[in-house]
Length: 147
Image (tube, rainbow, N blue to C red; front, top):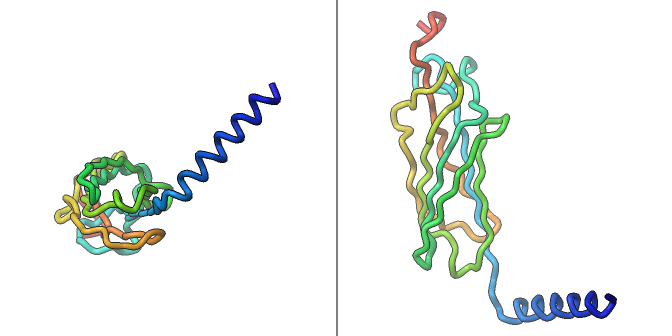
């Protein structure tokens, strides 16, 4: 039993050494943004508007090696979604597209104009993040206090 544990430790150490000496550099990228409800539908964020928790956002990235990666994210209690990945630097993100998929808020489920998606080049160094502009949903009908 003790020999098996020693063999596993030795194999783990050898694997770590090979990866460390191979010179493969890790790269970490992060994309985040917000989703809000534009209650009055006036295309400006004000005190009457609120964040949307649980809104779904899709992020599609193409790596420098040509691989297509598809991510799905949901907003947290602050209306923020985050996608992060660590990979070899040679395979890092080259270009990405973020787009809203759905809002599960019953009173704010219509996608506002100009919120169809954002395409961008990812040029950030490892450890830095890219912020995507806010995606906006609007209610089916504008409340009377907005008129």
